[in-house]
Length: 104
Image (cartoon, rainbow, N blue to C red; front, side):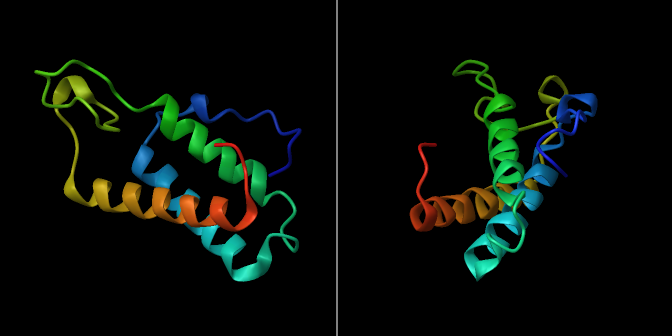
């Protein structure tokens, strides 16, 4: 991955629990001291975080899929392990931002 690559994450169906796995892995690498060794890790981390923000569903108080990252909220698709992967990725992102700073 380089900053000039043209592949958009919007070219594929956003499967946010998979994005969270990438986010967690990149943040773990950064926290382990590989931020300088892998110079493009920062844009990947930020793009993963952006994709999670873009695909968070606010559907109304009475909708059972409100507040989810479902790839098919109209069909009620969301699994328990998705929540674990999302929370892990977001938690590592918080730790990463606490260590290296940033505005998000």
